[in-house]
Image (cartoon, rainbow, N blue to C red; front, side):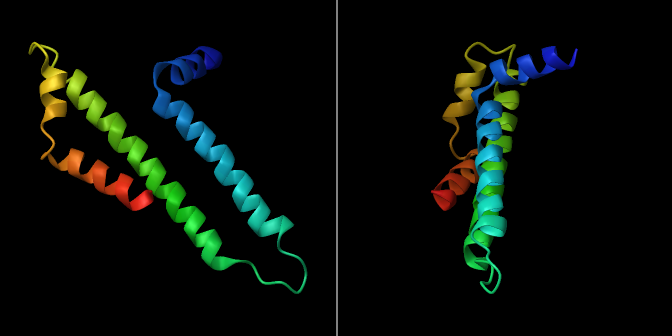
Length: 107
């Protein structure tokens, strides 16, 4: 059952597999910043560590907002013909503006 769950997660949405790759890269980066580059007598590079954490958080929030928009577009508008397309065309909605602001801030 667990393997079926992970298969559905990995094959269903590119956002979920992107989260996995972000998590792996984030873990490697934090490991390097905390253990490999931190020698005795050298301080931890706090600005780079904070930047890494903030960028990972913004990327994760961006993926969550994209998932919420997808659910709202496809599950909330299934009775309307081209309902998802009509939802995505409304660029002034709060979730759309928030997603674009996250993208611009993180890039």
